[in-house]
Image (tube, rainbow, N blue to C red; front, side, top):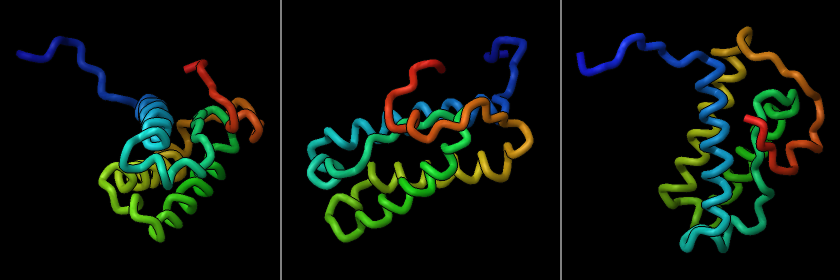
Length: 119
């Protein structure tokens, strides 16, 4: 009885939305972090908008960039690994698990280069 009723499990959409918000914040934090800032500084900003059809391409490109960080020391920090793993999870969730649940309302790849605050 500790849970308040009614309990609604997260939908695929709400999970993807929450993960995108967390990943956007996580990437921003890593760029200014003490241990990770020096090698994440050259990385592009990560703004994930799950309503944009270009988001899958953006995630795939960012995953590739994070994988290339293995040549640098910060790639082995727990935070960078968490970013890579979580980004892969979101990519799989959006591409396979939520495939029919998500609707892309815009197709503007340039919009993913600037902050999006309309969650």
